[in-house]
Length: 118
Length: 118
Image 1 (cartoon, each protein chain N blue to C red):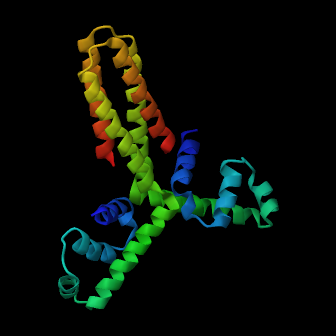
Image 2 (cartoon, rainbow over the protein chains, first blue to last red; image 1 turned 30 degrees about the vertical axis):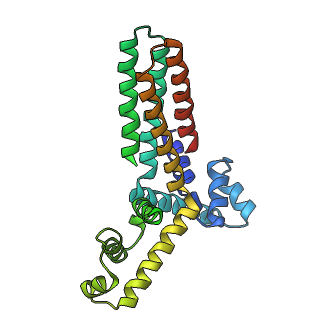
Image 3 (cartoon, rainbow over the protein chains, first blue to last red; image 1 turned 180 degrees about the vertical axis):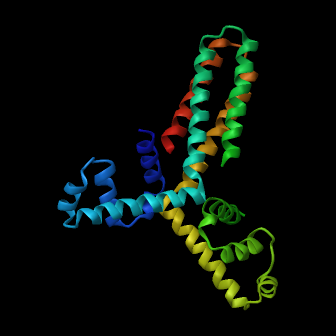
């Protein structure tokens, strides 16, 4: 499951760097959940050709991430945003003003960390 | 000035996709503020060669951004994080609990928007 999410993210970030042909095949496999045989038939290429294209796409996308680490950065930012939302939910249940302000300080650190991540 | 910032950001995001040779020349120009002649001498290439390399680097970096829009997305996230910090500063000067909670709602929207931006 995690691998599927990761492939989706890699494609979201770097998919535009694939050729149109690669993208069509990749999308048929990853998002339309078609089998190798089905894709082969649709694109009038061999099953092995589909397999090789998918493998090549994964390699290209992974290499971009190894160089740029943008999915990694994005996931860090997303995690911080989630934490901020968690703290905001806590604030709503907090009466004491000093406690609220302390929680705001935690949010500030998370927001600062997001900017520095970039 | 804005152009310099933009070039720096493009390089931060996509610089790793240039060759080592391109990176060295680009950094000498953009970050060490060396002239074309100085770089030409340092790298034992012609002044025209330096000029062409820099132009080529800018083109490559710009093309990546045109395809991926990641600098644009991350600038939007950074702007939201700055706004969150602004609201947090306001909260510190706010006494009324209901007002504080309203400001927290604004932060929540900004955090959600950040996640959706990606």
